[in-house]
Image (tube, rainbow, N blue to C red; front, side):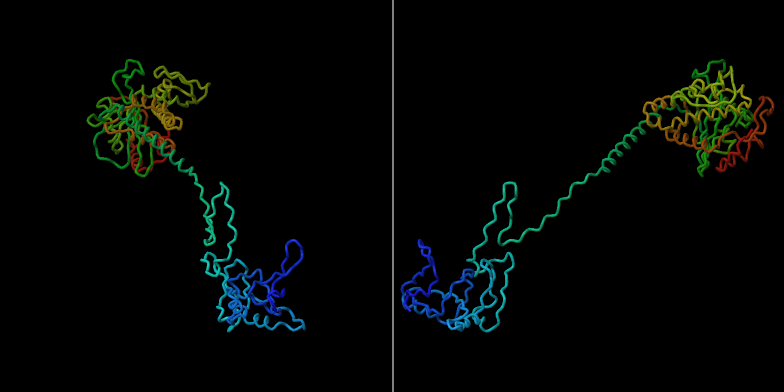
Length: 488
């Protein structure tokens, strides 16, 4: 066969005529046998072409002609020869060297070498893991086209042919607002302001209080005891008459037992007692003889309790304190027109009426027009003090700085206390007073006679069993009941 035989080259199209034509082979290249014609597969890369160990006849021919030897092209077996018999050379090559089924451009590499393929069964191909470095056999494989560069608003992709995609970043947590922190901060500020206000009030009251030597210095007894005295001194100008000196117009003993029970006992001003150094007399005479100190000693001897704090209220102080809290509401169920106290009470306007400081003072001093005398007067005095205390500790007063200042000014001008008393002690006294009033543990001790006349002192009030020892025993123990007070 000559070198110009058209059977050894694939057909091609001659430009310009539109007809297929045969291209001539290279000069000096031996012609291939017509029975062994094969075409190079277009999809199989050159790197995966199987090589045969046998020398090629075409290579020998190329060597003799002086041209460079070319790698033999793979042969595609024809289905049948001219006589219907399959081509033997094609069958032999297909059975001995299996073709690789890797796609063009992949990084698949045959698992076995060429020399060992004929000795063992065909093996599959193994795909390199993503990100591995390309092998020498796949360096010539064209890479896929690069991804388009992202726009100016999209971040550049960090991925390439040899990197793994980054795991998605966790979603950023939104900052939580903490309203409770603001509430706590506001509360702290409010508490600080309240604390500063309380501290200022304590300092102001302690610096303005009038003090007097009153305590006897006796040994302490269980519980806390306050002696509250209403003086009828005219020195403050609240009452103008010809009375000289000062007397204890009302005497109240406020005691808080160790168990917590609070009681308020009114001692009638004409109660017959033994005054230390002066013998038997009315209890208010002790104040006239020896002032607060002798009165305290007399009460301690009568009750068996040691007085811890002494508080004295002048008549002018009652009026100013009632006005400081904006007036009070008191009750009386009969008409009164008393010249000595100045009280005029008309029940047609109601048995309970709102009164100012002046009328409240007359209400608490009235005695001669009261059928029960000192007993009724003591009841009204407790009513006035209880109403003032309730107004003083009310929400409206505690939240109003102006009312607090007015009450402090009126109270410090009206009260006289012992040397050791402080604002804290006065606060505890108000709380105990309110507790006793709410529990109904207020009143006079049991009375045996309202017209006791021992001689030389006029009519006096005689307590039951001569100074009521059982009553005061229960008072010290904190076991008093409402029925233990005077019921007449």
